[in-house]
Length: 383
Length: 82
Ligand SMILES: Cc1cc2nc3c(=O)[nH]c(=O)nc-3n(C[C@H](O)[C@H](O)[C@H](O)COP(=O)(O)OP(=O)(O)OC[C@H]3O[C@@H](n4cnc5c(N)ncnc54)[C@H](O)[C@@H]3O)c2cc1C
Image 1 (cartoon, rainbow over the protein chains, first blue to last red):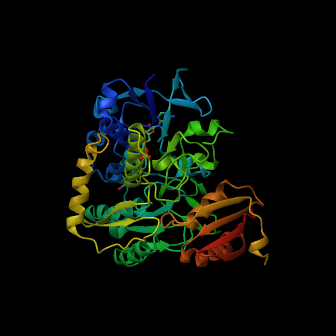
Image 2: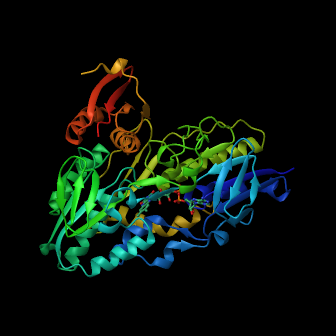
Image 3: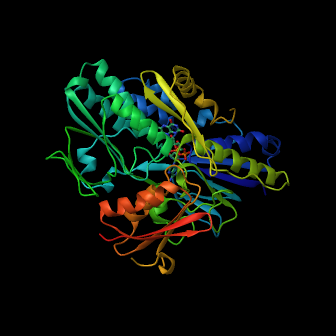
């Protein structure tokens, strides 16, 4: 019987693992000894980082999408199916359509999702840009905005930890370009005692935000929102009035994991318990979790998903070819940070080395724009 | 203050080696999904968290039980109060 690798999730992490294994073990796939199957909810791969530009009318929406079935190498059988349950004892996956799919090794890369409904009043009272619908709605709201107090608030946990800052800088640019900045107060709040979870980034931002006339507040965690009164209540006891509330909602893992209590994949918030180096699901040898889906205390970012996918794919291929699967994830994360005014900076860090941001430059901004276009080579396993 | 060494936590979060989101975000995440009265221990190698977590507990009204240095990391213990 052929070896069956099943990958759940056609986002950054799942696509890279499936493509890399299929390409690097191509001979085995062609000999029908290895099958690589990718199951994903929709035949649509969304380049999420592009959503940052949508509220400002700066992204062409069609550039953010590719059909997953057309994107991946032909050695991967890509199937549109929503996974409903996983039985790790019998090594089978069930889809919502009732199909049962057997696996030898399983990769769970089902990402994370914003859940504004977790904070009372937020879904009605706040705008966000973390899904395509929300980003389009916000574009519309901003277009009709005529001035007032914009409050930015950040839920915990969330993917892409630099997005709140980037969004704030781009918002400042946008309002200036529309001659609305004089009539607008921008208040950037953050859950921690500093302006970003990374101390060097926080230091950098605490100089740049006031320079752009942006007010800041620390230790702000949303407790509830009263849309009629336009007030956000923080867990720390402070109330914030607003005319426009823009947030990064708190996130959870994939919804189907909530229905799997008792399974090793089940945990609070639907974050899969994962070994920080091998990326195996804790207590299981044949199931791996990566990308946003894990409970690891690393940034939920596309680069994290990419580095982790390389480790998992290399280990799976090595094992298939009879070697020792000794590749380990070292906690590496890389992030661009848009600073507004057509400048950007970047940071890299891992489990052992903290990041050191450099002053923003035009060149790094150009790199980020170029990256936005070359992204599509990654899920194909080319880059 | 209760001695953190003898406090058994109901939830233990290993945030060693975490810079971003970091131990305090992990604590907030754990507090959000915990029940009132539960005790959460965060393992941290981030020196800023030693200072920030007690400050945040005071503001947010949760009980800071204490911090214990174990080898090269801190075990920071907090009780969810409301
Ligand atoms: C506004 C914004 C800006 C960002 N900017 C950056 C940035 O600048 N740099 C950066 O590195 N990262 C950025 N990110 C984060 C990055 O997009 C994610 O971290 C990355 O996509 C995570 O990859 P993933 O494969 O884990 O999850 P995803 O890419 O989200 O993929 C998950 C996949 O699983 C599928 N799925 C879920 N449940 C099921 C199911 N039950 N059955 C079948 N399939 C399922 C989904 O349909 C999806 O295809 C940004 C994100 C946003 C929203």
